[in-house]
Length: 326
Picture 1 (cartoon, rainbow, N blue to C red):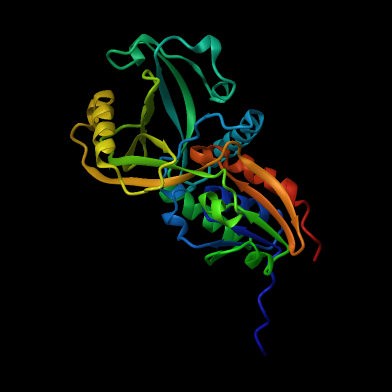
Picture 2 (picture 1 turned 180 degrees about the vertical axis):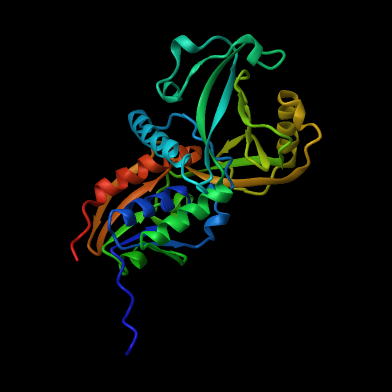
């Protein structure tokens, strides 16, 4: 018997970063025949190289940030109980210049088990901080888990570079534009700007606590441990289009993180991960009805992609609506 032609997709998601993959999983789980089109291997996107910790960082519009972060927190807490998801719950410590517990931003108050840090919980030389628990996402394991989940629910991944939205609209009546920085040219959207992000990745000498130093308002550093490695961060440069690693910035981050966590002094440096994140004055979630079909734009999350991912994905699904019947 002849092989039947492949079933036509009902939704094409453009982009395989954390927003695109999560959205595809939600849509496919809801019954939509879903394809993800990506020019890059999902394991090579800026999302896949992130330190990936649920971080309550505000993005405009603020109420949307609150709603999406809260939904993602709920999902990640559930995934922390799923074997091989790569999600765990970790202890966190944010070092502050002074006591801030009485006037915390709304997003920070979402953090589970939030409290003032006791003096004996602070590194030497620091006088104030906040303790909490937070989801920690090992992207080396989480991206394969998302891909497996997509496959299990009937979704498909297609290596396909997209030059115009007309291409996926010719393949499906609904397109989700989760192209990240690519939306600058694909949409086109001149308000999208790159944010250069960089982490120094070292071996893990036994650290299991996330530490963020915010005592200097001009710059910050973070220590984000995973089971076999630690991501040392603190580099965000808005408007920089060059994604090559900056070794001078890397040396400064490494020095400051070693001062913060002395156990890192002898930890072997594995690599420097650098990439460009998509920034926008406001995160975009919007339907555009075109003659060829419907486009749902979902991009502009900058460094908040992981934190927003599940909330954004469910918001996209609500706009796409109920899948058509068989």
